[in-house]
Image: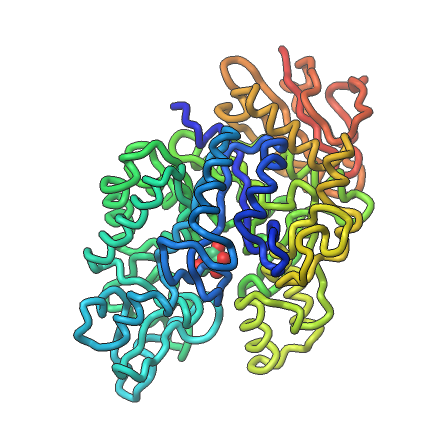
Length: 560
Ligand code: NOJ
């Protein structure tokens, strides 16, 4: 397999609003990030993915961009951004920026022009349609954030499409002039020296011509008509030809609903599209038929089957991104680990998984501290538009009880991941001297960076070790993957192999001891322990059969 920096990298995602506030206004900012670059360098990450920092009215915290070439006032200035980029590069790290071009803000100059008249040269930058015979929406699609995906606009008497909030109108990729605008904007940032893009819902930019309704209901999920649409590969190949191929950069496409087969088409080596995708299949292991808020317990088998399928599916061609949380997902230790007695062990076990599967690991800010989900007492404490819309719809339209709706929010709400980064035990975890835009998780007195960097046994130091191991051992990046014990319902066991070297990874996913027996072939190898989340491991007397302690993780190098 061909070497590439983006295969060897460990990426760290910064959600700027919640990372570090330098001026006491309660909102994280670029100077705050600059002040923490040494922390990230110490952790050892190679690439920083920065969620959007462009001008925005913040209907969706920056994922609604009103000016793609300027910095949001709350976050600072272009000069701050340039200093930040320089600081990142000086420390030998790279920066990838969020590219949000499925939609813009309705406050973008393009949209204001577009909505002003049917004859505006900007009209076709967006997706306008007349209403149906009774004045109803042009089709029955619902938006990702609930409710119709169409908004009626008085000025010209037509509807515009918005797959997200009504302040996020969808851009019309059918229009070649719009596509050129996007490519010029990408070139603007690449010429400033950035190292790549994370592309927001990029598999949604091509819609089925005619925008047909789906099924017979008044409102329905129209994903089949906008996810992986008919021209998506043409657009990405064009973008690659005109922009991406001219730079040595990394690209990752966020792709809800993408299958392994589709991911191969997006990331295959001869495709001329992207380096890797964020797939979502494993993020649905605890969702019922009605979607993410419809809570179901996850099982190890469910999670492993999906991860395994992606490992095998992209083994020869394409590349995986490895993540268990980000700014849209609950905290991984709350979801798949333990926040009580085994907080540390379980966070380290999950980290071992993410850094020893084949692919590029993504760390979401605070994950390296084991930050947890939050339970605010009232819906008034929440800020996320998706959460607030869902609360309204489920409480008042579907009549679900307060307890039930809050239980869904506690388990899945996006604000779980957006509470301020916990730097120390001072008020608000040291994130701000003012009032944070979203309250801090009260556990900052125990879980914070100051404590974690001082404690050599912390989750933070374990991440550091995993990242260093990856830099030393090609097998972690390029080694092939093989699943062992496919039916065990408590432990996930696999091997990696490269040039005659073989590693064995054993992970107990639960809070009880797990005994198991290895296949003969592995039992006869002698082993050297590479890393474990318990520090008192002796060479097992029986190398065929052993018992793992709660959430125990071990990585061995095997010799025949
Ligand atoms: C995916 C982003 O990760 C999410 O935060 C955002 O709300 C939507 N795309 C819309 O941009």
